[in-house]
Image (cartoon, rainbow, N blue to C red; front, side):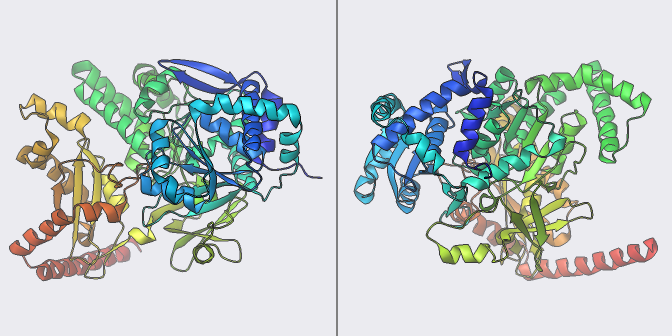
Length: 622
């Protein structure tokens, strides 16, 4: 009989193999303390007994609301062992979103981090008739005591429940980010996560050392990317350093010195901005050294991209640059980081190349909730910035006739909970899941994502614009926090831009402009900075793609206003709705100056000119 491929069995096997090794590193104030596999297992089994004492049975859903903490992980392993189904809720969720997940998943219990989260559920109790109780993390000690009493009467209850688990049993309901509408509950089976972790560890280029890796995890467990660490970590005996506060990630990097760091691009963008600022502040010999080191790094990066060995002279210069410049940047990341991984949103190629020139290659991957997180990834020795890498072992990718990326493999979900029509729309009978992303696949199997099908802008003139690439280019400006390109059914593209206070405020204070973001957004000097960035981006775009006008918003897009998901993706429709007057004004002001029809005609003429020029180039090349 084949070994069971469930998260419960995976966890128990890790406890057996790694015992007293640290499973978790937990921050208490400013200090980090280890929690061994054995100690974590004892607590999770006591919680499992406690849940059984509360009447939670196989297949029943339990909602978990909380940040990335040890308690969250222990509850998840407890639920897995008794065959119950976790329904994670982001701690930043509104009352309406909490109600949707708890109600839709038919959760019978809600386990939440603190009083603030419990209060959300309490306000909704009349509309949640299935919820029997609300348990705070602080109450887990009492639940464990109930578990001890249950274990005394039924000592084998948890073992028997784990033994009865099947690979295809439901493990969790992960709700999509809801960037385009109401979130859907993705049914992820035990074998999906098991296969996902197995696939990552089977990627030989990662050279994962069993029992010796430290992962810094700050991503919420309600998101598949963060949740994946609860299976891939134990499978390789890693220690998971859990940082519940995303604003302390930089501090955590230097404190726990991780070897693996899964992150969304926004964090790498922030680090890039800090490093660039430090480089820009350098003067004299130090500035010349940095310029020289970056040039050496770019040459070395170019050789690596071609798979070529560094020449002896370049290798020697690279070693000097590493000691004098790169090492200082690496120290900001803890000094031991081997695998910085990026996912959840596109990483701007320029950001990747910048870090690569500092001898810190970032391995961008691609995935979706419907495929249990990751489907493709760049890897050591096989990195192409701008792509999301090659398929993971056991994963197939293909393109539909319209260019939509398809994914197939054991990682593909079972469907949307209580939504057969939605399932049929994305999960084909032949096992392919339709990702909703437009992509290309080159001869070496590298996948490049163009954009979300639903995000593609079709202008009034019928031109297709992929906004994410343009937005990523705009965000390379150190003073820009977020950018949103608008233009669907409009004559041309415009942009909404927000300022990065960490960069713009010091710049403004040096010039006596104050630190009020709303005021700075209106200042002509600040507008000039953003105009320079827009001009630079426009230089590389076809005329119909270019940003014709832009507005600097008085504040950033906010999670509290539902404009940004917990993994920092923009909810486009909501953002545009919230700033509809600003968007309308951009087009109205432009229409007052020049009719949109004339703008469209000029674009058409420019496109015809560009087409003739491209044909001339093709004939010349031939």
